[in-house]
Image (cartoon, rainbow, N blue to C red; front, side, top):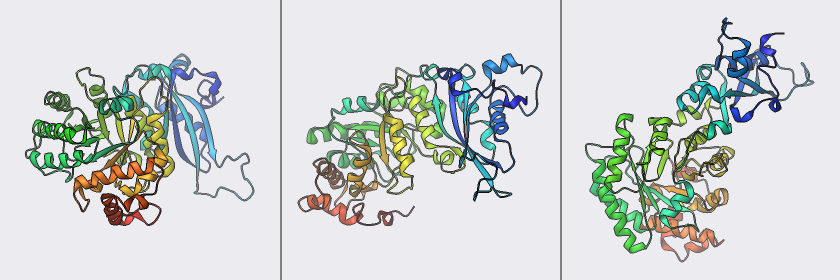
Length: 444
């Protein structure tokens, strides 16, 4: 028997201990006459015990315990005949397969860099190989603490349980001083924003905007706004920096009074996120921003899907994570958008749920659709839709709260706009989803 066909490498799903495996699901293309069983087994061997040629110490005993297990190879379409009527595969055409490969947890333990090296390592240099998902066995996931606060913990801080939460990103993105940022912070907070974040483009200490300065001023504005609106505001300061400065940034921000932090997770790395989240000295929620993640995820035939990456972000302890909707500035597919929300909120071992943070060109006219998609347990992420409101950022925030309240009552935004000036102006400026093409609002 060809060693690549051996049941040792190709067991049935029912014949393995799934709790002892991390299973990668891949989209893989092969040439017309390429053997998919050998291709799948070669991928599994390459990423565990073997290489392109046999080596003496890669024994059967080693393979049983440490080699990958090929759990499924499914062609799309699912041909049974070599030349199905009307569907002959032409020379030069590619055939596509879904391959499910299980990697022993004993090879990885709780080592995130080693997980990535195993499940998405050398093989991602192959043409037409994409990691679609990762299923984490119980004996892997139990080694992680996940979110410290999560969706419920953030609601507990704010004391808000009966509606979606509202986020604002301070705009401009960077280049402003702490006093300018503080005014923008207050204007948004007092209008009804629950959580205000730095933009991803201003992180750590900048020459024109020191971290502790903006924390102190913005938290003063949060307290001032609370006296007016009778609601708390979380501020997630962006601590993104070189990894050796990251935790110091977090601790300085917490000492200065901040009640949330933010990291550009793919810029600093998943292990850096985990190091923050699992440290008992980090006593505030962590917002994970997705910038640079698209470099890994957007190719349809290469890289790693956003679904797999969001599951990793939850594993590593973010409390809320940015998810791009399909309607606004970017063009996420609807199915991937919904699956990414469920990656935050569905049961995942004993880990807490993450708060889905829906952002990227969100405007008031999208609120009914976003709530229809994601329900109430979402965080609406709004930047220019608040700061670009013709009546100012306070009115921009008020317009969103009006849109949220109207939607929860099951009423029409157009009807509500007749008696709510801030909402009316927002709809006039940016439109209402379903009535017109909202893409006209975005230059990107």
